[in-house]
Image (cartoon, rainbow, N blue to C red):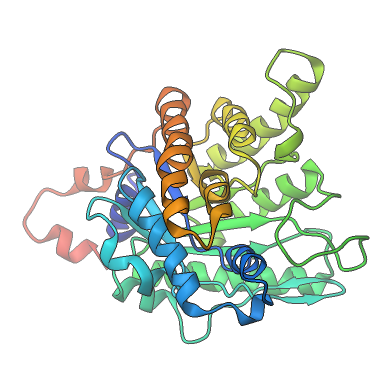
Length: 348
């Protein structure tokens, strides 16, 4: 049976990929990481970081990295007003829905959307896709797990209603009782492959309506072994392969996030991911974090981005074109149409 008509979703995914069907996307929706960096350079508290500084950083990222990216991920708080007008016409636009101010409880993290923001507004504003980060641990309290599932399911329903791609990011996180706990995103020290893989397995179910999965490495990205055929390499690859098999069986394309690792470390992560069938990346800090260390000297940041940032993005693009799996849009439903008006009637 041919696929049902989801023309908005299909077109949105096409806009997010390059012509060959690879997703080579740059994230600049990060809010606490950039605010913390600005605060440290300004000698102020993160809560005191000004709107102008946040906007200036995000505008710079679009100016330098927007053209070679297949799509960019923007938040509506800062990036959207800062740089939408500077985004190249050929570059896709993915927009964040979730608020970074999650509720951290003893039993786990509770996600919610940005105030006064919705799937409908993202669609109306011209977004090609809706991105939601769901902090998730299958071993969290039952009420927390239920809340996170319901939240994702509701977003999936809204994305079906507005026929726009749903990009779901899944991240394991540390419980508040863990020593050295932080609400900043770092790879959880107790992160184990089953926590990551069971999360992917859950949200790959059709009931959530996910169109593209943005996934973290099932093992800490900073310590992945070299792909040298050793037992450690084979074991690590099996974890990626299992993640890829879950996505393949669910017929959901998937990309990798960088999770704050360095550029060389992320290239290694992507090597593992592409061997498992990944379709690309949606990464931020691995591409631009090093260059932003020169803040508040924006000219120096720009110079570093044009050198190191573009070089990293180019290296990722080269690897992606060589080893990544291409996504192909499915328009097979048109094959069953044989008369004028069938499309209009079928596209409910």
